[in-house]
Amino acid sequence: MGSDGTVEAVGVAGYAHFLALARRSQWDENAVELTLHGWTPERRQVLANLCMAEVAVAEELDPIIALAPSEARACLELQQGDERRHARFFARYAAALEPPAPDPEWRHRFEVELPRVARAGSLRDAVGLYHHVLEASMLKPALQRLDDVAGVDLVLRDERWHIGFGMRLLSDLGLSQREILAGLRA
Image (cartoon, rainbow, N blue to C red; front, side, top):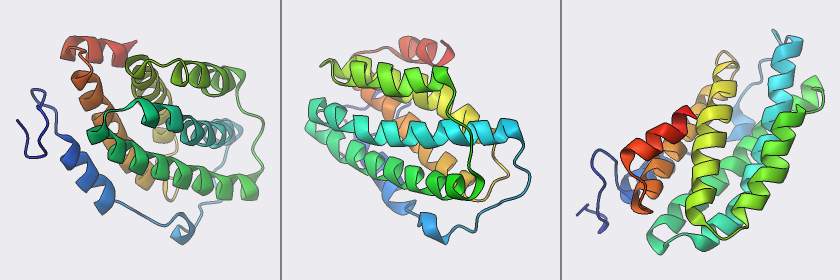
């Protein structure tokens, strides 16, 4: 049993660990001096996708929070605050750079599929889609394409704890480590 009173999955930190990480890593999106050079059309497209995605994930965490066990709710609530900060952060860049419209696949994943799954009543499906398909397989690689942009390192730091927390929650919901890792590769 972990120090936070939960049964710990082998190799996966407890909720108290993620809460401590989240609280230590708070940052002010307005304090970041924006990098306004080097924005190719491809990078501006990534920005457009991130702007839309961060707004969507912040909004769709409410039904996931409602389904979560009490010990996981505080992590999800801090994560929601992070996502709102990310949305404000990328909105600052968008206001300065006027990116194109988001990619249709991203729009479908974040504005159609995520709300449908998040509101369907299965915490396991919602966390699987949100933390692993969207965060680990789409958002993190997109952010890595902008790793030289001021402030993106802070967003990536947040995403790392979000993904780790998602793995913990999926483990607590009965997914084996093999199933979780298979979802990351999907």
